[in-house]
Image 1 (tube, helix red, strand yellow):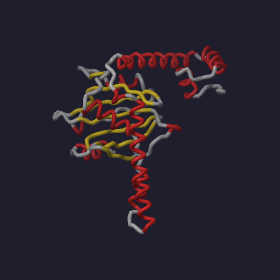
Image 2 (cartoon, rainbow, N blue to C red):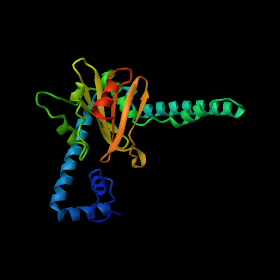
Image 3 (cartoon, rainbow, N blue to C red):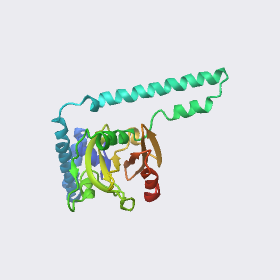
Image 4 (tube, rainbow, N blue to C red):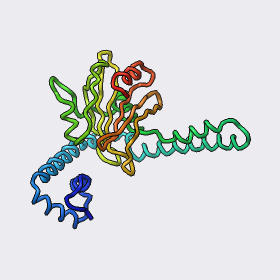
Amino acid sequence: MISLPPSERDLHAYVDHQLLESDRHLLETWLAAHPDVAAQVQAWQQDAQHLRASLSGALQQPANPDLDPALIRQRIKRQSRRHFATAAVLLIAVSIGGLGGWQARQMTLNTVLPMTDAMQAYRMFAQDGILPADYNVQGNGDMQAWLDRYFTQARRLPDLSQAGFKAVSARLLTTDQGAAAMVLYEDQQGQRISFYIRPPGPQNKLLPRGSSSADGLQAEYWSGDGYNYAMVSPSDEPVTQMLKQTVGF
């Protein structure tokens, strides 16, 4: 049962139709007496409608089996099983008298990489061009205003102008925890990096600042203001190190 005044989590649960019937009626009665909060909730509801309308276009595109969430989860599970199997072999070798104990420990710790979905989004959007953009910056278009429509109280987009990059387009995505988005940056040479924002993972898991790499991509990730963030770039390009120095990752 919710408490009054309601928390922001309760209000978002109301917008997402996740409250019990009794809680919903209780909250609606409270909102009727607090028009300022009711106006904010109504704005969130409109944002949710815009989000569903934006994402509905993807449903009209030809089916792409590579983007099926069930298949993606199966691939991740298969990769995890392979990592665990490798770790098990190494541990057996250690028990016999081998010297691979530290390597086995590292393999076990790295079976699940944080913000893997950020790197997957970069591949589909920035590398392979599978996903079209939902928003392209034209003239004096404001990328930050577009992002704020879907992610309230999120941190500001990184300013990468000192590194020669500017935000050019963006794409809305979905996760099991809610809406996500990827903003694409480009420089004059056509090099691409991405900024990724998503809700926290299971158990509201926020991330410490860190990095991970896989299949030629490098992700620098962190959390703040209720969201997880990542900057993704090709790991074999000088821009990766330059970004660390420019924006302090």
